[in-house]
Image (cartoon, rainbow, N blue to C red; front, side):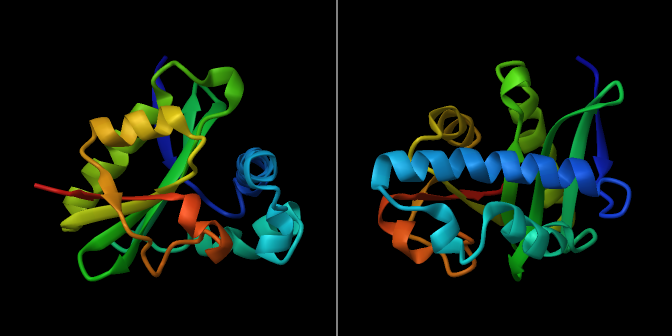
Amino acid sequence: MSLQFIRADLVRDRDVLKRFNVEYLTWIGDAVQERFGLVLSDLLGASIPDYVDRELEKLCEGTPPDGVFYLVLNEKTAVGMGGMRRVGGDIGEIKRIYVPKAVRGGGVGVKILDRLIADARSFGYRELVLDTGPFMNSAHRLYEAAGFIDIPAYAEAEVPQALHHDWRFMRCKLG
């Protein structure tokens, strides 16, 4: 698989970004309801599509070194997304690494994380933080292999407060 990372553009890429984000949050919402009996849209204060519409600009805002968001293509087909934003000083936050179910298992997620870590180093970040659901076992293995360790919840996390006690928050110090 020959992957191409393109910086997401909200005008050009809005449809695929919205679709991927809705798929991602719907997957999370289903797991949150199954595990905790909570409705994600209630916690977010909007339906998932409305939340994505409201938050998409924030997710994709920023230009290096303050942020970057990628669509990942194989040929001309979008096979993943992921980004990073500065959350303070020399700390970045990994956001929305997502690979559609049909493409999972081919190493796309690893390549997205590797690219974001390389970008973080080039931006001068000294550490990265992220949040991950307790049901995202493959992601946990990916993050742990990259040197992420568990930490308490951090202020900039997007995760609703009601989920903090069961969510994983992680940090990786960059060498």
